[in-house]
Amino acid sequence: MNDTILVIEDNIGVRENTSEILELANYNVMTAGDGKEGLDIAKKNKLDLILCDITMPELDGYGVLRAVENIPEMATIPFVFITAKTEPEDFRKGMDLGADDYLAKPFNGTDLLRVVSARIKKNKNIKDKFNKNFDDLESILNETKSNKEISLFSEHRTIKKIQKKEHIYMEIDTPNYIYFVVKGKIKTFKTNELGKEFITEIYKEGDFFGYHALLDHSDHKEAAVAMEDSEISPIPKNDFYQLLFSNNDVSLKFIKLLSHNLLDAEENLLKLAYNSARKRVAEALLFIFSKYYPDDRADIFIPIARENISSLAGISPESVSRNLTEFKEDKLIEIDNGIIKIIDFKKLRNIKN
Image (cartoon, rainbow, N blue to C red):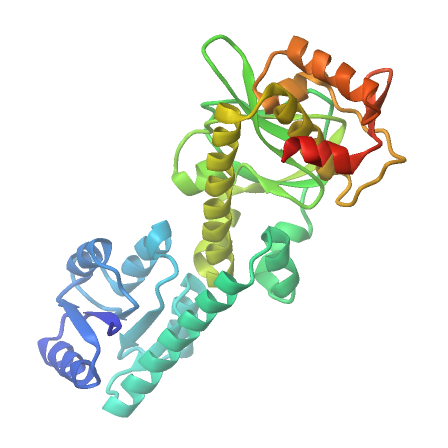
């Protein structure tokens, strides 16, 4: 399928000439005579690149770019200015706003096709690379750590100490931050009409959380609370948006991460519906333990509260206690003052599976 390009240009001659050259090169071309019309077209179509004039009536090119960058599904589209403004400060302004390239008027067909081809190819390479190589959000930090924009997430940030059981945000709170776990464990959970909790995720050192509501432009649909004394780094949403909408790598990572989380959520719902209480408790134990140690550590006791197992497994605390007692009698775990040690990972996994 041919790539689709939107040309936003108020000069009829330039618009028609640009469109003709692109069509001869087998691109699908859409055109608009001003920024407002162009933005309307962009919202309704899947585009591979936008070519946009700067000086236009209704809405200028800078305004179009700002609007595009604030619409998540459009933020990764390559954006190229076509303009008669050739002063360095004009170029700088556009690049600071997030433009990918410039074409200075008058330009010839060779220059036009070179820029268009290069920008579309680069964007596709980024998508291919990160679709094939995605583990978790930490990989984006490792792979782009030389990018100065990443400092928004990893450097010079306020670190806030959170006590055990202290809330970071509640359901229906308005999101103002994305959070990075510096130390400790944070759980997110939903509460039903009877006040029963269901844990949706547990975040450990190096994880981000709280971004779902920001990406969805909605209130938080879950609460977040510290499972132990923790340290978190709140990142203002404007900084997050700036990074997300100006860096294709980061945008694609979050899209992939959300897709991965959705699949996990669907799998968990199936397990809640069909697995026995014994299987659910075994899985909850292994899940919580994995948040503390990625490898099996039979010599380590960890603080696993029964209420957290209950919230993860979707069963009552009494049922959790009965199953833990059975696991202890079967020599799968040890319990010391409420702190649990897994001593037979293999048998526990056999129960889960």
